[in-house]
Length: 460
Image (cartoon, rainbow, N blue to C red):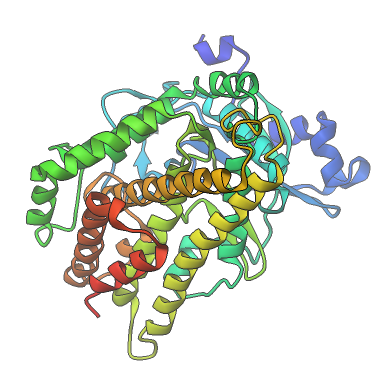
């Protein structure tokens, strides 16, 4: 018997899921309970690789059920274009026309037998619940979590919500995006830091999430290691970017800066971060923003979340030239992206400091109020803190951009540009921008200076 079965784990199909829902009040009640359960419709919408994802609907309501899949043996079937682990392009080897159903809880995409434990579902649900407590406006509610089955029931984020990255590719403006994301980041990061919490509570949180080590190790490899060495998992738009990829591997100054970021990522338990806050982990309409998929959640540097969001917006900016056509030159849309980058940081900084001032008499042990008891002194401390956080965010955002161009997993913004030479032009501009920001990030004092720098690499 497989170890997972011994522990009580079993994958649910549509029939067993229906029975499970009927026996679980927290889920059944969301669908109306009673007779409403007789009209349930279940639709599988996941890719079936790392998770089973079902939309479950009745006449009275709808939920999403997500269960970690116990992996078959996997092999890559082409370029890995994923924006997140949930969408890796993988298939199981076949033998005699049948799927190999060995219950192996790992994927062979980032090293031999890279472990992908079922416990990632626990950390995803835990992070959603904690972030939902702190910022319910922008975090979907978790109704139920079953640790034995690695199964979560949560709010169905209904149409017309779409993944933000797809909206950016299509050229859709979201006027509240900066306001919403700055709110989400300010609240989730501040309220899980030592600016608000005492050391005991903070250390307990760090200890709890430190067990998400395999997801962190995956990030360490694909973001901070592989792009800077020869790795069978790296890819780029060849032959156009062959020399560019080699230049990254030969850039000693860049490697030194990335080494510092990697150390910070591993060692600095600053706040409970999402851990994968790119534009593929956000669902949007013009009036709503919902952050999803925090399976990489752990206590890490705040700048990793902020940088991931900003870095992916910068990638979207550079991709616009590849999506421009005679009907739409995308110039107005590029201005909107740059404005969103500016507003996201400026609003985040404003809201974060406001929370700090509002709760300066709280239990936070980073800056005790009886020591930093003069307004001028507190102002100096806050300015230094936010400057360091700004530079951290620029560094991490740049590293995330680099890995999306010469590393294992790319982004749809650029991948959907069919003309390879045009795509390479966009990627080269983004790559050169990212390298210079990463190496010179301490020279920037404002986000407006960063935006000017981004524009200087634009080939338009």
